[in-house]
Length: 496
Image 1 (cartoon, rainbow, N blue to C red):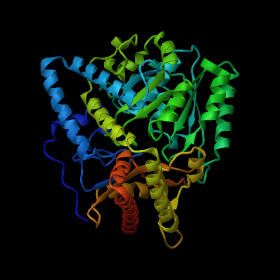
Image 2: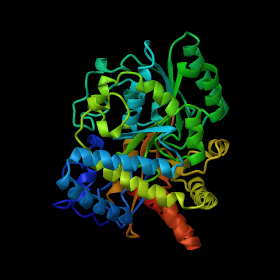
Image 3: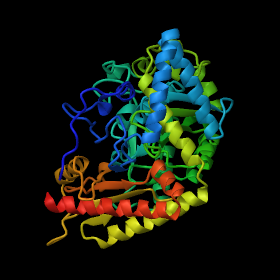
Image 4: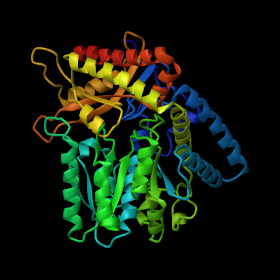
């Protein structure tokens, strides 16, 4: 197959900005034009991104808006300080985001963060200020969460450099340094999704075990996980919050942002913090996160001292102007974050204009075709999330599957083989002239001697919007692309 073009000698100003203000995960690999996720900091016309559970390329139309923003920022900085320009732009972005989701500054605080992992670190650091005793964090199994989330909840380093460019401080200096972790499995050892009622009960038992001892707890719910699961359910969260009040802090990991406005409002009305990103379902370039905090909880948190750890992870303009202690944070702007969030808002605005019934119709049609292919092709073993998705009343936009050797014994690929398959797909133009990206490998079984490793075919907001705008032909084209992607996976597997 023909190789992809070599790394360009010089990136455009907008592309260069998209690489700034992140950690190791956003940087281009040595000598390559792409990052560890296979994404370039500019549109790639021949690439179909079914990889939104991990990362995506910026779309051509959105990239045009980013180039315009970059030029406007350049002009603004020539007339004012970069710090002032950054603060003003973030204020506008915050207002636009809240308006899009029918929220307001009167009910919701919004703190920008470099990534979803950074948002978890900020949330845990703030939650710890409410208590003298160390937090007990209750979360899903690490395989279903972001790779650095567990470390972030304990105030520990999750990259060699923070998004501000600092070397991560020593763990003992973190407010959440004493945090202990309790993990709840979403999947059984064979990779099947556990019944939601069982998972809810495990979360409730774990929380009550901590809280009945008079200890503070941080419950980290997920909506949704790497493979498309959500837990605990809204009713279980409501029971816990109603019983334990402020002794229990809840953070909802919605970093995939595969939830609708009604669910987002419900979490905030329960008093939960919500971590979101614009770079998963909404397919903006990686590294644009935010932490949403209900105003009542925000009022409590503002009365506490700003955690010293956040000086290495956050910038003053990323916090609401009235938040005490924000001036202790660096004022150095992160213009890359501005561009990435601008991309996210462009895609959110486009998606929220599509009627909900049409979203469900498109997602359901694609899901039926993809699941049929996964169940009928010996190259794949599908992870069936349909029962979990039905219980949560969520459309299925993440299709996780285990690659298998079709003959002679249909053996699952080992981790190293799945990683090689993933990398090969990133760098290969297929016979149809396209390149396909999938969500990166994720462990989907228990801690057995040979855990299973899955890839993920994911729908994103831009894919759904394009299908909607194309009418029935657009939906058919999306389904054709998804099935062609699986054909490419099978063909690549046969060549490895």
